[in-house]
Image 1 (cartoon, helix red, strand yellow):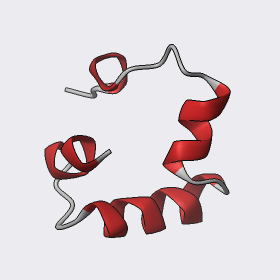
Image 2 (cartoon, one colour):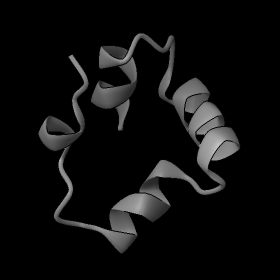
Image 3 (spheres, one colour):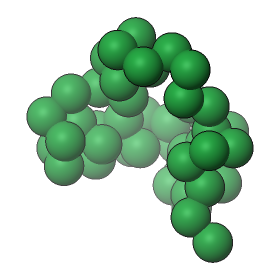
Image 4 (cartoon, rainbow, N blue to C red):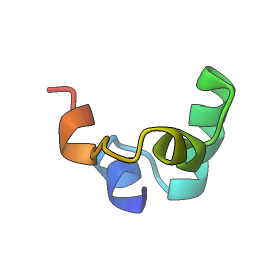
Length: 46
């Protein structure tokens, strides 16, 4: 998650997690638990 946070321009993984939870109603780690086959490479937005 830390790499994804920095790649997305967040100053910290905590800030990313906070904003993710605010937007989607669950923690990023919870999403990964639900869909473990999702990897950061598949989530990139260019």
